[in-house]
Amino acid sequence: MTELRRESVLPGRYRHYKGGEYYVYEVATHSETEELVVVYRPLYGEAALWVRPLAMFTEVIEFEGKLQARFEFLSPPDGSTL
Image (cartoon, rainbow, N blue to C red; front, side, top):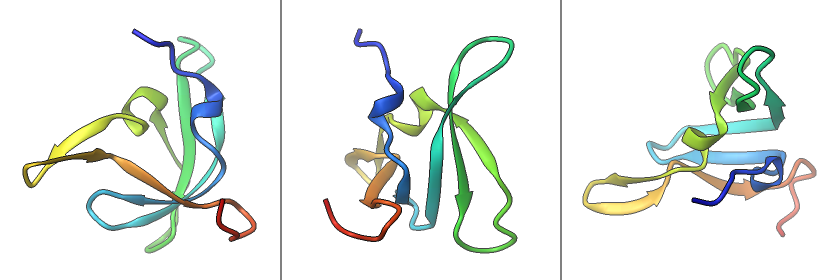
């Protein structure tokens, strides 16, 4: 199995497979477990700051019979396209 790396998630705007959009700040390290977590904020509602394990953030899931990324990268912080 390939080890996940911080570089696998870039800062910027992402779309969740259920439709919500989020802004990812960076990948951080949990102080006790050293697990990598993604630091992000929803771009709707109260916009609280959240973290999610990197492995979960980057996983491919099955939704409505199709395999797809849990979070799809949309654009970098400056809004340009890659």
